[in-house]
Length: 147
Image 1 (spheres, rainbow, N blue to C red):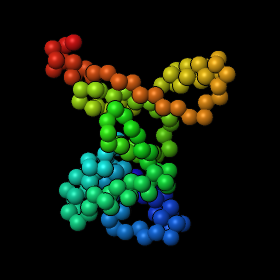
Image 2: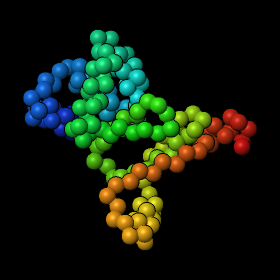
Image 3: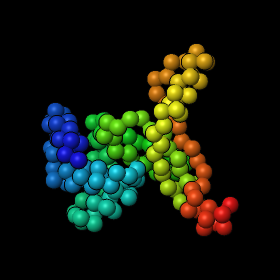
């Protein structure tokens, strides 16, 4: 985790901003979670450790993390944005459970190759993409009686 913290500190310094204890705490909690979090979820986690940190500070810090290339704002099938930690891992896609919201990251070279093939066969050169598959996870299907 020290690498994202160091990269964030460098970004902050390069842009003439203050690397406050509140920002450091938010960044630590965000990267330790390893999850796709809303501002509200991260704020609750941070406030469990430090009640003085407000949701506005969490929001601004998440935006800074995005500008620094350390986080990505994602919009799934919900109103609130979720923020995903970026730690130089390979591109991945997502499976989202529409019942409980579970989010599974999928790293599959075969899927990536197929996407490239589809693009090429249609005369496209991919510059970026995002694939999100929605469905119901096995736990939620069990709760519903095995649908």
